[in-house]
Amino acid sequence: MTRIIIAAMGANGVIGRGEGMPWHVPEEYEQYIRWVSGQTVIMGRRSWDIFGRDLTTTENIVVSHSGRVTGALVVPSLELALARAAGTGRTVFIAGGASVYTQALASDWVDEMYLSIIHGDHTGDSYFPEWDQAGWDVKRREAHARYELTIWQRRR
Ligand SMILES: NC(=O)c1ccc[n+]([C@@H]2O[C@H](COP(=O)([O-])OP(=O)(O)OC[C@H]3O[C@@H](n4cnc5c(N)ncnc54)[C@H](OP(=O)(O)O)[C@@H]3O)[C@@H](O)[C@H]2O)c1
Figure (cartoon, rainbow, N blue to C red):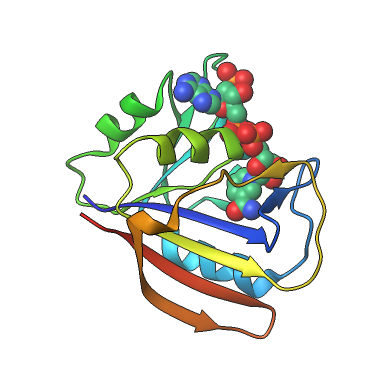
């Protein structure tokens, strides 16, 4: 089971503003939907409230203590989410938000990261956590008109 963090961010690490993202780059979002389609997505309850309506072709697991979630399997921890995702043969995408990225990066669970850096200056109120590039290798880099994608692979 490959476990992948997937995120889009500004060069300053910003990932969100209010109930959405600070930019409008639909081609990047469409790329995200293509990748996760047919796979398993794990996300925090707040991100599910924002993005869940677009995740119609995925197995969705939402972490929440409150349980205020409809349309997805709800579990009370990231460990349980990963345990539920195991054994399905699907790739597991950990898709935010900030609190879930932080927990995933603090663990040894993640194999790869698909990170899109959106061009331009962006401001917001949620940020991708600080992480140490020394533990990761670049597997692929792709330049797009409005963003750059880097696929990072954990050095084992
Ligand atoms: N740019 C991107 O790629 C991207 C992707 C996703 C999200 N985002 C952005 O990220 C922001 C949201 O991030 P966030 O950190 O505020 O919220 P979040 O991580 O999406 O969700 C937080 C909620 O998840 C639940 N949760 C988190 N960890 C848990 C755990 N270990 N066990 C049980 N429940 C847990 C809790 O739900 P309950 O309150 O229900 O208990 C918590 O309030 C938004 O701005 C969104 O737009 C950006």
